[in-house]
Length: 101
Image 1: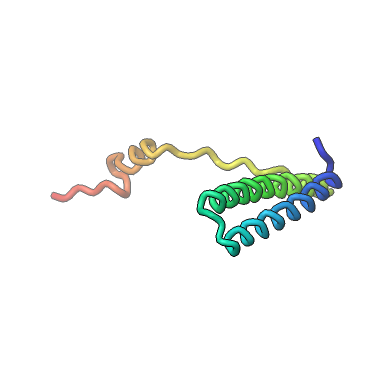
Image 2: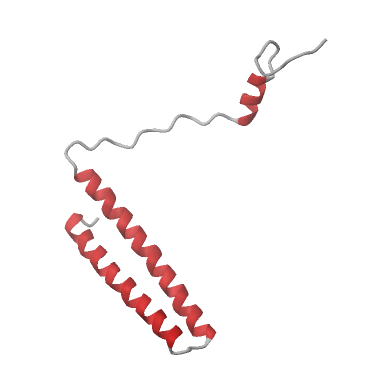
């Protein structure tokens, strides 16, 4: 697994690659390239941006773990099921169930 210094280099490289891909897409549009070429370039750019986000997230995680007072992610409370909630609300004498005479 790469360390933080390596991840910084990967982030720098991915930013440069995304910038070059954006320039290439812009040039294709300006030069009037056919729709197929523009679509392929746009798909490549989208994939590169996605990979850049993954690299950034990994770098951010490494930065967080390197902090001296880093606290782990809190565990979210268990999700209540909708049926249990509905049953709780429909119990006789509950606040949501009203009877009219």
